[in-house]
Amino acid sequence: MEQRIGNKKSKTGFRVKNMLEAFEHIVELAKDTNLNNDYFDNASAYIRYASRKLKLSPMQTVLLALFVDRSEDNRIRISEIASYVGCRTTKILRLSSEIDTLESKHYLRASRSRDWLSYRVPGDVLKSLKHNQPYVHTVEPIADLQAFFDRFNDLMEEMDNDEMEHDALLQQTEEYLAEIKDSHFARSLKRFDLSDEDKLLFIFMAHLFVENNDDRIGFGDIDNLYDNDKIPHWCKSELRGHTSDLFNHNLIENVNEDGMTRSDCFKLTEYAKSDVLSELNLNIKSKSDHSLIKSDSFPEKKLVYNASERNQIAELSSILSPDRFCEVQSRLHDAGMRTGFCSLFYGSPGTGKTETVYQIARATGRDILRVDVDKIKSCWVGESEQNMKKLFDRYRNICKDSPLAPILLFNEADAILGVRMEGATRAVDKMENSIQNIILQEMESLEGIMIATTNLTGNLDKAFERRFLYKIQFHRPTAEARARIWQSMLPSLAESDARILASRFDLSGGEIENIVRKHTVNAILSGQEAANLPALIEICRNERISDSARTKIGFRI
Image (cartoon, rainbow, N blue to C red; front, side, top):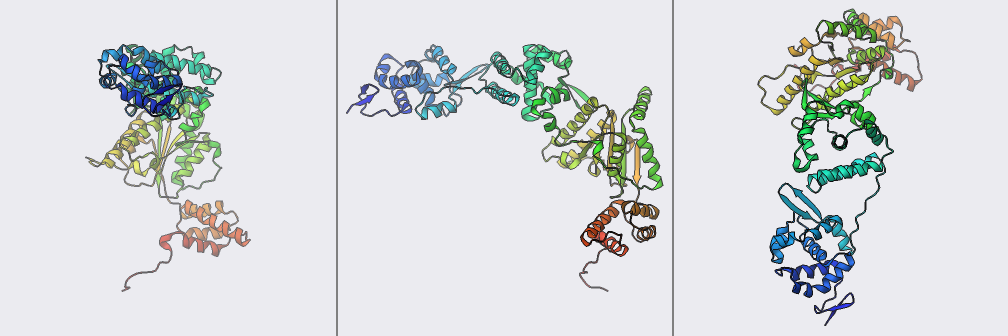
């Protein structure tokens, strides 16, 4: 029985159905043949069938079949092909031009490290062959900046796999950039008039930030941009010496760690993120965890203080007013003193510490960068410390770009202001100590405004105590203050009733606010708008869980 292959018949007796079947015969017949003339005669029908389908030369078809047969291996060596067909490696090397053609048609991807050459067959090629179709490499046009960085990420994956050299990366990046030449990003780079190498370096750093939110780019990362992972001397010298145009155009800056500038670590500036990369909305993305709260978003509230804290709060508010603050900072600077203002608000829950910060921000026109410590802490070793460092780095950048320094608010900071562990051995304790040390060092170099609120009364670490310029204790309100709070929150309440409630119930301002809210809800439901003293007394009794009636368990003696 004869088999017809194309317009020819074969002595195999089997009909070839597709290219993979032809490849199978090509590979089987090639074993230990040295790829001699007899082999090509014996396999001619299979080779002709596949080469016509693929539009490749006979030798290219044979080589591709041999590589496809080993496609499960992503590191196929030429010596393995030579060993299978029974020839010297040098013979396959003499066929390099044929292999290069397969690579140019994207049938193969080559990995060229310093002393290693290997190949792989891309998955898309195998998919086409399974469908008995030649592989046609197509590239979608780059529509916007996000697509540009997606494509650049693919290039960097090829660099990581040693499948692309630096010069090819440089050329391909320029071609991609040309496709988005009308974008704000491309026009900005053109305006800076950067060299091709500086342009590529900035795009690479921006890629790390876009893909990984990386704000700590070291020389070890930059190595990946160059052949054999070796950063050129000129590049390292320009970055260390601050002579790179990327610094001159305010595109990158050094990382600040523990109050010290790292000469070997870099990150994008806020200008680069918010302006040059504005089409990606990275400004929103990077600030999502610690967003600025605008000063005009706080409703005005009349807070009632005891005399002891009222004077201190008034003094601090006056100092933080824009004109006065600049004057005070200038005089402190001239005297060689720290110019940052760190304040501590401490006292029982519900005494108005956080609300006071909000009202100071509203009165002085300062936004707030609010920090919830629990959200910064991570279960991963070292990540919590990095999060804290990034927070202070971001605050510094905001201060540089803002006409008024915002308030850095550590709300409910009990977890970080307590006494540090001596001789800590547990990982958690070491992390806590590390975070505290970072905050202490940052407070030394702070040029803005930091306010921490805490319920701690006697467990404050002495190192923190020394660094807080203003330490304001919020006492529970006196009976007189409580009466004023009642009337300010519930104007319809008679003065005499306010005094009755103030004298009978030792409540904080926060607790009084809760009671007034509940009374207001009840009034809406019942339709009775006037303040109802008996109803308020009942709510006061139920406000504290510890004061409510409980079922006793056990014997009463």
